[in-house]
Image (cartoon, protein in one colour):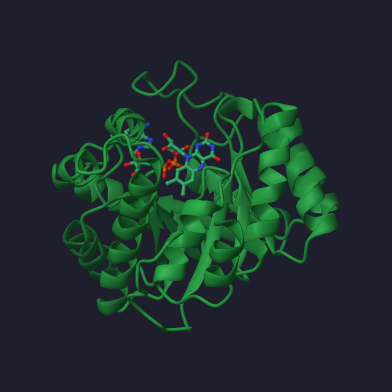
Length: 300
Ligand code: FAD
C-alpha cells in the first residue's frame, strides 16, 4: 500500500488529464477503467490525442463520443493539420462538433516523415498551428488550447522564434496553452517570464508526465527536446527490481514537482496519464486532492 504522507492539502488546484485513443480491445478496456477511476477527482477537463495526418481520426472520434455519452467529463479533442487539406480538417471538426465537442487542442502535428524530418505545409491545408486556430475560430465559438514548449520545440531556431509562434497562436484566438512535459521548474519559470514579457497573458498550464518507465521516457524526451534530470537515475536505481518502490518514487517526483509549481503560483496542471490511473492517483493523493486518496486505497 501507499503510505507516503501527503505533501499538500490545497483543494483549489485544477487538473486535466490527457488520454490517447486505444489501439486494441485490451487497451480499450484499460482506458475505460482509467477513465472511471480518474473521474473521482473531478478533472476540469480531459483530452484525447489525434494522430498527425489523421491517422487516428476514427479511434479519436470514437473515444471522444464515448467520453461525452457515458461520462460527465468535459472533453476536448486534439486536432492536427499536418498532411491534411482545409476541407479534411473542417470535415473532422464538424464530426467532433456533432459529437458534442466544444474544446479543441489545436496542433500542427509532427512532420509526416517523423520527428526530425522537414515540415512541409499541405498545399491546400492550414500552414501551421496558428492558421488552424484561426480556422477553428472562424468555424465556431470553440474553446481553443494550443501547445507550448518550455525548453523550445526542436524545430524552433531559438527561444524567441518559439515564443513568437505561441504569440501568433494566441493572436489567432487560443485561450490556453498546455506545455510539453518538463521536470525542471526553474526552466519553466524562466520560460513563463519570457512568455509574459512577450505580452502573452493566457494561462500556460504545466504538462506533468508521471514517470511510468524511466528508460522509455528518456528516449521519448530526447525526440521532444525535453531534458530529464540525472538525479532521477539515482532515485530509481535505489528501488531497482521493486515495482511498488518504483511507483512510489514516480509519484513522489510528480507530486514534488506540482507542489513546487504551486508554491510558485501555478494552480492548473495537465497530466499525461498514458491511459493509466494508479500513478496519477498516487500523485494527486500526495497533494491531498479530494477523491484521489480513497481511490488509491481502493486500488491497493
Ligand atoms: P507549432 O506551435 O506550430 O510549432 C512549434 C514550434 O516549432 C514553434 O514554436 C515554432 O517556432 C517551430 N516551428 C513550427 N513550424 C516551423 C517551421 N516550419 N520552421 C521552423 N520552426 C517551426 N501531436 C499529435 O500528432 N497529436 C496530438 O494529439 C498532439 N498533442 C499534443 C499536445 C501537447 C500539449 C503538446 C505540447 C504537443 C502535442 N503534439 C501532438 C505534438 C505536436 O504535434 C508536435 O510537437 C509538432 O511537431 C508541433 O506542433 P505544434 O502545434 O506544437 O506546432
